[in-house]
Image (cartoon, rainbow over all chains, first blue to last red; front, side, top):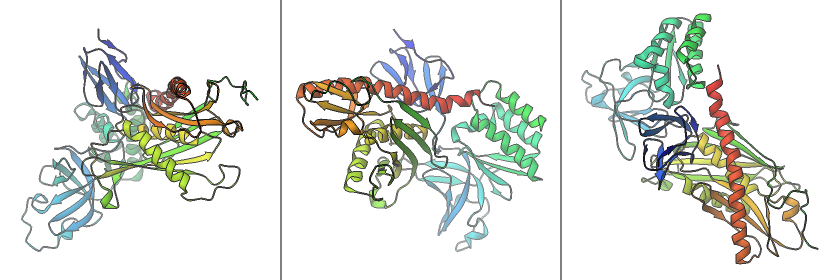
Length: 227
Length: 237
């Protein structure tokens, strides 16, 4: 007989018993040990029918294909750029993926992206040994100028964006800032003045610090309007 | 002299007062403090991150590196700072006690660094260190199949086992086997078992049973500390 030991949206820790018996299925963040399903990480329970999942609340960014990320140029090589994307591995932006226009052989690559430049790029491939390839060819993939970057936990990015972008649109409109959210937990904010930027940053940190609170959208809205 | 009562009046299977706190070092990826009586350990986890020197890299999975040390003021006679024969041994056994719980397959060529410092020592420091480190690893979001709980037992001659010994008991003159044990509570797997002294087979069996019970209590404290940090997020704002 299968028995569920936790409720939806419960917080669990590694090794915590989630379900007894074979009636439930382990998904990401969980594992099966004989008859039990246990948690692998500190996280939030999500139960979808018979499938049990743990959404991590901490941890480093693990790159996946098609993620849009924000990175910093840390090195320039013969055939591309090395980009720091905030995890344990740096990514590679190859020459042919760098621009839609033609880059001549032997050109000075720092004219396109120089050391310290912040770029929005897309992950096009991740190998098993964690070699990460990026691309700059696509809509909205560009170099970012000005603004500031704040770090959040990558697993909370979906909450910052919200359903169909509802949360991030609200923050953008209300704080009058341009915001780009990278899947790697880097958020770029640029506004006309410091106050606007601070307001947007505070709203985002609110989500970072309380991602699973009830009626989060409402609370962020009140915060943005109240200030 | 027969050992019929403990120095601090505890029952034979009673732990000292335990306290755990997660997230004590803000700049680290994960951190925790663990106190057992007068023994205090703090642990910080940094990583997974790029591993240097490169010859240590493992392309199949990430590696774990532990560093245990006593702070110079943690003991009654000043401890000379820096690695010693003892701290190197404890670092190694800590690493081996934690590794079976971890899954680092997702992080080839990378390293997870664990730094353990003992700020106050009153016996059982390696156990407090392991307890703190396991909390810090969970706080860092490392994939682990279970928390690791550790406790130091004393085996006295004549079938007596005392749980969670302090310094006075460790120095007991008539001989006692100082036995630190680390267990993964769910599976009951033993990841650390050392013994300094002599004991019979029966005595060790008894000690293992006592350790399992004690580790369940330690786990409860660890779970509470983790849920305090992350559960708190639910009620904030």
